[in-house]
Image 1 (cartoon, one colour):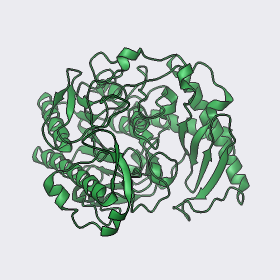
Image 2: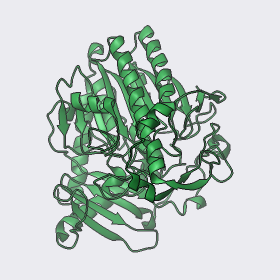
Image 3: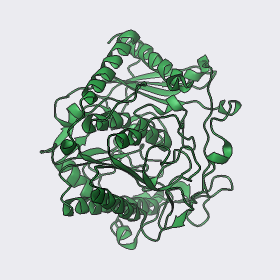
Image 4: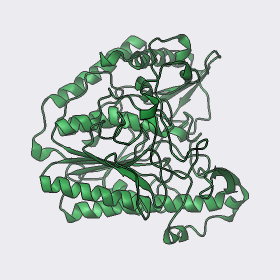
Length: 504
């Protein structure tokens, strides 16, 4: 591929291939149960299996040792709401205006829950939603987005969380939040078993997002963190006031790691139940993070950057799939993969129809089967510059965008979160601004710009320089120029979607 037309042709071939794969529905007996698990702000290195020097994650380590370890797995965006949208839609979040945390999805989007529900799956969502309010009247709550049942929060949550069940008035649940979410998930799975339906379940944990807290036994596991961490102060939210505070990094890490270990343990409780019910073999369990580690928790990452930026530390996350019936021996894959791949992959495996609109993901079924060693397409990332958004017409009435589930962290004077989304009927040159990336099998182009400003480009050879220390933009100008043209072509497609062209 050396020009934008070639890139577009390849993308079309991939969509055709995915459609063809999904055209012949899999026999019911072959369709897996599916559970998607996602940690909140859980970066690539924060697992034992990726070599973290302090963290204890025995369950994720066991999954990685037995299943498919995706060593080059990426979140579609360096922040949470956009990445979650990509999981549900298979599309880059800028296509429907989910630009950053606090932006909702659009009601017209077709989600993996819509598709699997039509294919006969019972669909449930548990935990963090963050794509709009979870209340009953919201046009973007989990039910509107295809889920049969949900016990969910508008945003993130801590110990003793408050959830809304199927859009009803929020209620408080006592206990460790990850274990509560898994307990509710198991109740739903048992119901699906009684109905003899395959299940599709999304479990989005509130951990390890700050502000941090942990159970006594989990905290005790990290009493011996290096004393040198105490020398640095980090800024985060106070559990007492909900306002910003500064605390020693060592104390913060102790609580953060306790949350990750509790989340890991809860995944183990889910796996134990699946084994007990004798359905573990044909249940696909897929864990990933939603973006890189934030600044208050990053101490051991080998990669440049953190949550919020486009370097590897901001978008490379843990990714592991366990499915004993099909993944019969451990595999570590170096194929580039991204959260946008989840929808087309699951549709292929479940025999569900693919939406007839532009997708940014591809099916990873060949990776699961060991038949793909290199990704046939490039991956685009883009943090849209929404600084002019307030001039546009709201996409959804403001009252419908008001959240109801409380959380510890305040925003302004609110202990809840409200959402927004805007119409973009016309596209101008400045709409191409923002940090963006085109990722190939070897090279990664990073472009930074703001509206009305000049752009700065960097080119990295990730195979030789995974820490992104050497900018090759001037020494390999042809590669940089070619990728720049392909990136622009992809952005044009995304902006066309943003105008609602795909909904007609």
